[in-house]
Length: 113
Image 1 (cartoon, rainbow, N blue to C red):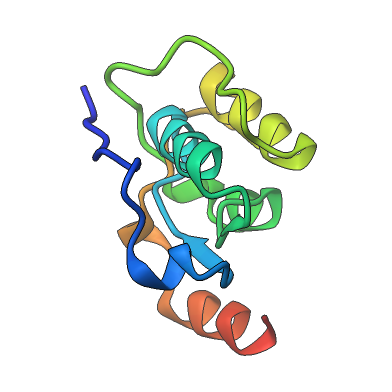
Image 2 (cartoon, helix red, strand yellow; image 1 turned 30 degrees about the vertical axis):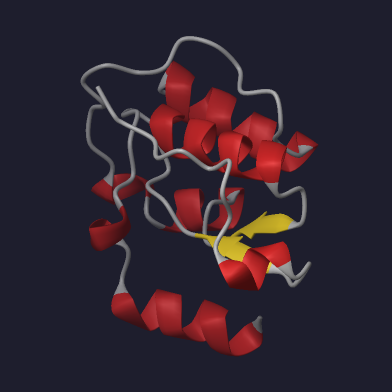
């Protein structure tokens, strides 16, 4: 089971109201972590936790051993859709780990962000 840190005390750069980015595995626990971060810091944006990333790397997905069963509360509509696709195994498996993303893809997305 995944563990999440206590997010009640935000790092100084998030306390100042600046944008924050979160990049986690595309799995149920990654989306739960995003939701919990956004609960405390609503301006947090997800990075590479979208449908385009999921579809571009679906052949690299693996099975998530213990998925989080509920829909996290603080996700955008697009994030909810990806969460449900991942959780339900719509693309064959239920987890896309960060380290399975291609470096070129990550770089291209960062440069265009």
